[in-house]
Length: 167
Image (tube, rainbow, N blue to C red; front, side, top):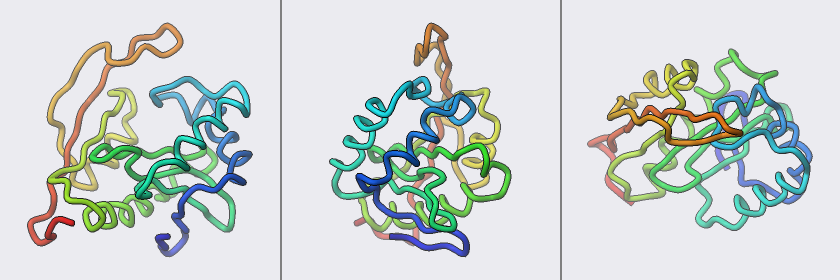
């Protein structure tokens, strides 16, 4: 578990299904995600099962005031990702979460860099990643087809800080 001034970042649990579904079914939250909004609890349950099966834990749910409001971490190293319910946008929450997650990922792994794949229309995520030190490495067109719409990608990377020894 990771704690910040306002947040608890913790591994997912089976009982997180309703809160996760509230996020993953939201069209605004999922606008720039690599899958469409989840149509039902069964879809979210499969997603949660996948999250629960990954060890070691490098992907965290974000709790604020005891309520799950998002996720942040590396679903598969070295790629980081994050998702936040729209009710909590523009409050600095994801920056706070990622500022806790990034040092954890460096300490928990030996990867030389972390990466991100972002829809170029997602200016908020691109801005956050750049503020965290990520730099664009390249772009690609038509990388995902989501509900019949082809989406492009901006790829970013963050090198391991020189003062942090791997692993």
